Length: 179
Image 1 (cartoon, one colour):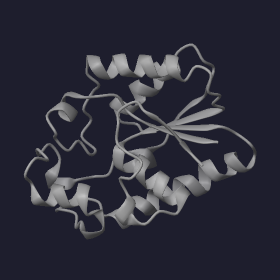
Image 2 (cartoon, helix red, strand yellow):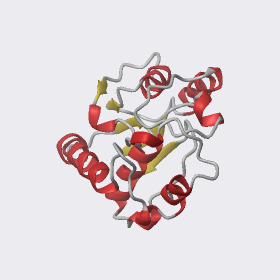
Image 3 (cartoon, helix red, strand yellow):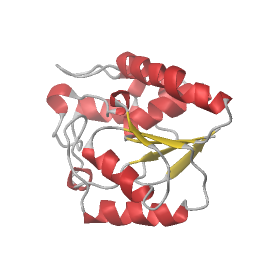
């Protein structure tokens, strides 16, 4: 079985700022939520955990798996989508960011940003090389990453169109089982 979880809360989440590849750490609420998620998932079996190298995801994974002997593997393909010149900008009222969240099929990345095609290509490579072989072998896989990275995983695994990119939700530290 494949499970995905988004990192815990950061100060930029509260401020509605696009984080992207900017390495924003967890805040205290984010740490608390990761510990609560650890307790809530203690009966869920994981053979391996893949994690983004960004500190907010890595710390969430370490807190979530504390006391468990689950291998934690960093994979750079799980980094959040790059938003280029939009990173650090507030989402409220920005038309490009509004399009990203509400009409993803119409989103065009800003300078230095990543397109959905590029995101899907690297996430697809990760799924093909890392996840699908493990699932075929009957393993339970956990991925700890970010909103867009996780949504790309879910879309590809469930065969969803880009217009349904955000359909699984974006809640911090909410475990999603991907059938």
